[in-house]
Image (cartoon, rainbow, N blue to C red; front, side, top):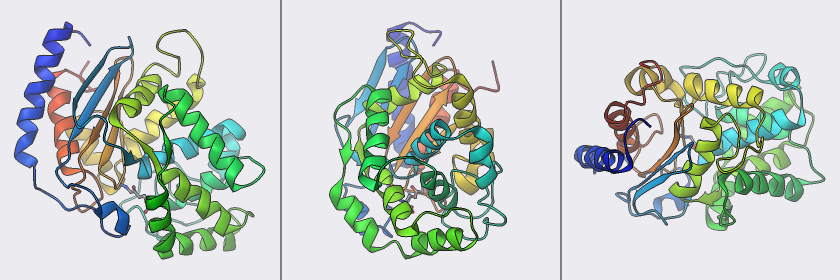
Length: 310
Ligand code: DON
């Protein structure tokens, strides 16, 4: 970022104040009952720059489940365990106007890795002895990239989603029936839902984002944590598909590649500059945090983060 620390802090505080007018707008996700068990107007923001500075505000220790932000992890691990060609032979790379848990965008393959069908497919490509082992690899990977040992499986969220996952179950079995994967659909689904249930906070999530913003290199040493070729895929897919059927409009308004989760979290990546994590549980109709996306838009302007205006 091109301002000094005090100026950045002043601009972030000002942006947060401007976003207060969206408090109370939208609804907390209810189709996973345990997600309702939150204070709807909780708010937290963290920005970690590629030079390692972190700016955090609000309820920064509040743990939330990553939900669809885990689709980034599923894709990362699938690309780690397979070639790019293998992954994209089973999943497409194009946005869809249908909602995230629709079966419609599954033609010869799911439209992209960031709808549920796509992430269930990438989950099927993650290697490991069994579901426990595969999940441990995902969790360890998240911990390593975000530089935390706090991340864990949120059991209540996981159980709640497993009990109410009829739609995702239908998607998993449909994918298997189409020959998109051969694995046991119930195990693939279990892995997918476990990754959605990873609990984290905005500080650790923004650190994870900063690594993606830093071409996959560690912030404090030049360690290559994620290959650049994979970072480029992740960030470009976030731009085109990360906010579901709202992705195009969001990119136009905000100009920051982002990925949302129905818990109310959004992760934004500004290549070369920073990772941004915001948490605010009330969602719009497409499953994106209302205050979160409005704050990202304001921050983009106030901190000059729009990737298309450089
Ligand atoms: O599979 C689901 O429906 C949820 N575990 C995740 C969906 C989600 O986060 C969509 N996001 N905005």
